[in-house]
Image (cartoon, rainbow, N blue to C red; front, side, top):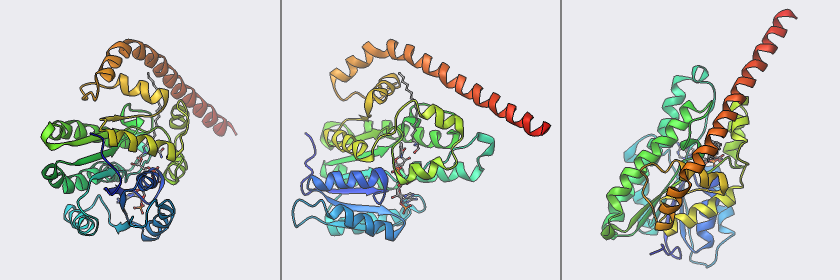
Length: 309
Ligand SMILES: NC(=O)C1=CN([C@@H]2O[C@H](COP(=O)(O)OP(=O)(O)OC[C@H]3O[C@@H](n4cnc5c(N)ncnc54)[C@H](OP(=O)(O)O)[C@@H]3O)[C@@H](O)[C@H]2O)C=CC1
Ligand SMILES: CCCCCCCCCCCCCCCC(=O)[C@@H](N)CO
């Protein structure tokens, strides 16, 4: 039942940087052929070189495609066709292209809501839509969506980002029910990574509100290699949920809702731990509220000091 990566064609959107690049490396190390999809060509070529250093045989190929996954469906469909002509039908698609912008609701531009929804949500719909028919016909396939812990709970500063990451889950839950029926043999995975040390994370931190930073620090920053390993493992296995670390585990159990279970053990664990994790969550929520209150008082204080000065 697990997908065999040797010789498989894996497409990674956002594969030129951060988590996506590490996912590509992880698959390449296990013998896959890779298509990287992102916009900037220099970054793509740089990543290709880096990935190729991990080859395990001399047949392996890394193909680069420069396209914006969030703009035009026909364009996305065309580049996927090109990739399939060169490396064969897509066995696994990893939707990792995405970005985060944080700020208070009233401080975010309206265009930021549109942009994050385009990149994080529609940018996952288009490539998936372009590969699904062939996957169902061939009765082989994995589609991975990279959401976020911020796609499991809403938090201060992430009105635009959390919504776009929650949307991915709705898509994945619905799609999963369409494809999992045995004959199709297509499996959907949603990953919920914590803060991860990537170029995108460094960029996002330059404008992050203090509240968002302090609340996020509840979970520690992970290495992208570690996150990638877990995601690839869960995707190969066909697990619907992919999370990392003890807080990742707790969050996924707590927010399982009507998500499908992959094993009886997973279902039993959710049933047994739900009450306990909700209790723990209430304490976390209390601490988040007090962070927000403290920051507000701090701000008022410094504003008053400015006025008197
Ligand atoms: N780092 C973190 O803390 C976390 C990240 N995530 C999610 O993981 C994913 C990857 O994050 P991370 O590795 O940090 O990001 P990076 O910013 O390091 O990399 C983003 C990648 O996506 C590509 N990309 C961005 N926009 C588009 C687009 N419109 N079309 C095609 N490619 C695009 C970028 O290339 P280019 O700009 O050249 O197009 C780049 O390859 C994102 O979806 C993010 O939300 C989830 C949880 C935590
Ligand atoms: C039982 C309950 C356990 C509760 C644990 C709560 C932990 C909350 C922390 C939320 C962190 C959000 C990280 C977002 C990462 C991300 O996507 C950005 N870096 C954007 O890239």
